[in-house]
Length: 235
Image 1: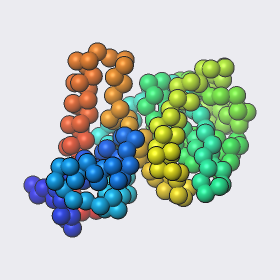
Image 2: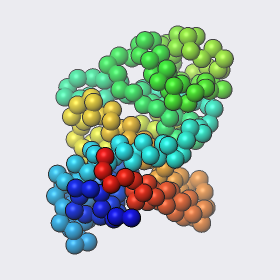
Image 3: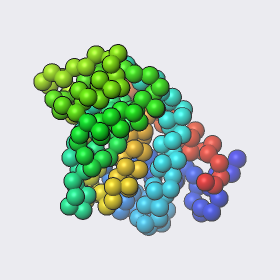
Image 4: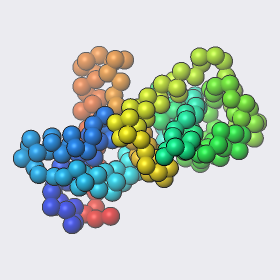
């Protein structure tokens, strides 16, 4: 099997390494360029940006296909304010009870119509409603629950949605590192891909033993490596 994607001068493994680190870690394009230079590879940060924009969504799609949709049946939903070029947007995020991201959607509004649109998108991906839906006190969720999730229990007690609220932290960290998102479309594409990378690669090291952590990380990296090397030569 060829070790290069068609039209690229560097091996698949190098492209996969750069894309993985950019989506998984709080690292800049210039830092990645220096890391590769330290390994004897001269790559500009603009080239790495192109790799990430081209291959990030492709790898993310393959990660989702490999892992399937076996999420827990307890959903935590929350929304966070994101400013893009001075304009306010709302990033809606849905995670399961283990913190795995199921769906995100960047929208201009924080009303019932937006909540329904977001949950429809999530249901289309999962294919079935949750057993429990946990939200904050936003009243828009009440209507969305009545319209789409009548069979699910709806909980909105104080502090019961810390799981979803904590899931926004990587977005905030990456937003600061990137000095803000440039357009709503780019933010949606990037954050959606980042969620897939984190689901696979962010092993919860503090909830398992060191031996189990190393084994889980090894398995996750093996899955990602398989995706990188087995992908078609061009897209």
